[in-house]
Image (cartoon, rainbow, N blue to C red):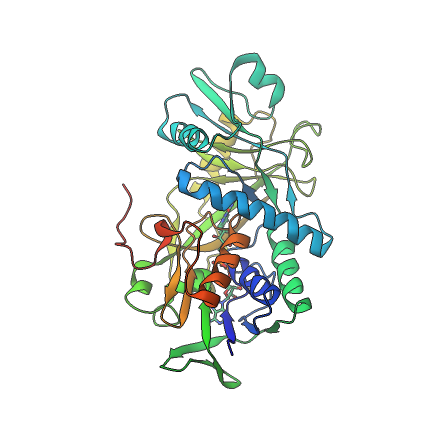
Length: 377
Ligand SMILES: Cc1cc2nc3c(=O)[nH]c(=O)nc-3n(C[C@H](O)[C@H](O)[C@H](O)COP(=O)(O)OP(=O)(O)OC[C@H]3O[C@@H](n4cnc5c(N)ncnc54)[C@H](O)[C@@H]3O)c2cc1C
């Protein structure tokens, strides 16, 4: 009979555990910490959900399914996890990323709108445009609550019959002809299959991902900064859309979830780190100055000195697409490259497909772990 070890109960592992348990497949989640902690890739209060996807139209069907599953998790948990405020991408009309958003929308007939001038100013006063810029509005976007979402998925998994071994780091996963052995400080545990969802720890040499895959994965630090509002009527969490600004400067900007600060993630080359265990708590002053200048230049509704700065880690593949697929008795679910949270529920359901039948009907060819892993231009 099938039995599954899910190594890592962060964003994707907790969803995989939930989806496996919903299918009645016995599963145990192992985590070095506990679901909902903020030391991996799922910390920092908010995440963007969007559908007109500049990373490629092949994601759109997955995003539609992810949205349905977010709504199901909200029903099961009784918690609001996805606030559907819509989203905008702002930037020069001909910027390749603006074109990529529009191409994804065209390919899937998504109801995006291109806003300029007074229309843009009135509808999205938080994000004024500069000469030659447009706002592409995606009504099917919003913001997610990452830590409560992971807790909700883990609870839903446990309610459906899964077990979670908290504060139990996995040292090794060994596959053989009849199953897998998971080695922890408590001993050896046998399962028929293992799911490897270690997030930014995927890059830690020799820990979990099979070689040569692990060699291609890098752990990177992403810093978030929170700025106070000048006008409390702007950036409200129930009405202000999430925003991505492309061009110069480039960042993502979230409504004020807690009422105190508006989060801005400046898009600069992420800092490589060896392991999330050594995630730097301090941030170079030059970085803080750079993000403050970006806010001063483009977000007049904010005071440009941050009141909170925090750094998180994620695992990246060379081409910026995750690794999701079955390799023998293990399913690899890793390296979601800074944009995996919104997709976590559908990735979890795909993991369940891959365990149950060895295949999935969902289009995940672009995520195949055995694809040639080349750096994207
Ligand atoms: C600052 C930041 C902003 C982001 N913004 C967005 C966004 O707006 N929208 C979006 O869609 N995505 C976003 N992402 C990306 C998204 O959050 C990640 O891609 C996603 O959380 C990855 O999930 P994961 O399950 O792979 O990793 P994690 O959520 O980190 O989970 C990995 C888990 O594995 C456990 N683990 C690791 N090794 C072991 C071991 N040996 N034994 C036991 N347990 C282990 C860890 O403790 C952890 O709980 C962002 C990421 C960051 C860092």
